[in-house]
Length: 519
Image (cartoon, rainbow, N blue to C red; front, side, top):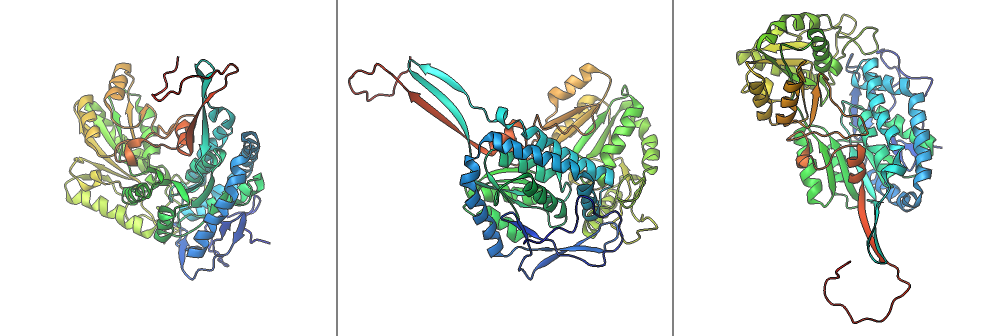
């Protein structure tokens, strides 16, 4: 009998109280939870208290290889399973995620620091991908065309084999669910390496996948950091990799994986801008920017981190500061918390250093979130909302992705000037405009180089019937491969064309040695 997870549908964490009996995180191999035989563990601490939550194993070489062998054994039978049978399993998986929504959110809050409300949003956005994937019979349909007399060409989408997902800390449920449904419904078997900082949600999803009816070996979960990543990059049996994370790691994953002949889909860093024109609805703008800049403590690849105020819109900045002051930074389980801690002491230190660099380079810190800690949790990784004005493009706080609750503000005289600033930035995940002018919005859309554009929408992340369309340095490979939607289906499948000739009146003809001409 395999080991079990410490949480269940009815029993899961509800507070930041210190855990008296810490249990090591398990692996998921061949549809069983198993303890690692490693002697190397990574301690995982609650970001709100820095109390120990669990120890995450660094899977041994034998365990890493076991995950691949399990996936290889499962592939032929899973590949041959009909799309209708796979769809029924996905229906059950979706229902189980809904039943375990509170459990998943609680695990995310304990390990990653998100507020419960934000953690539920994390689960929901991943769930939507799984729901959309239930349309597989439509998404996987091929095409057929009679190309000549007695001859037709058909297309099929075939699975790749064993594929892998390398997931980040900031969306412990959503990012695994960007990959798991799409990779498996197309007939592949999957190895997931969750972030060693937040593995709990991926483990719950593995349990739910087993309960939904995924066969042994279709989904495996391994753990670790650099060594586990390098194993995925160099293992010949793994045919494709999805990755979400920093630019440094992502560029390494993309170049190394590609050099080893693998397909690689990698979403990297960002510096998302919002432009506000004086004709926009002020209250909507203020509410939108507050949520998009400081929600999840700014630890989103689509967080709104740079604000450009055009003309008289600059006069709204003091009111934005006052609203940000009203936000409650607290433990994620606490009622009324608007944002929680950042993920680690190292992350806090880096964010604070970027705030200080802005001060040293001549910017004005209108709201300084350094030095804050709620009375109940004095030892957490706290950075409260921070707003910095008079920022220029040369400043470090603008050039680097902060990944914290920090909004940098700039001014522009015209919309064209604001667009030029955004397009000069290396990143291209998202850009937003707030305006009541249709012509201004359309001018912005036509000229802006970001892959995901919002018009009076602060976080323009497409729903899963579309695809996550980052651009420039925010996505490796120039955006050729993007997550979920039809592009996700295409990434995890190989297009096969079959041209067939069936004729009832074949007669002997002279041997043709030239390229056939069909008519």
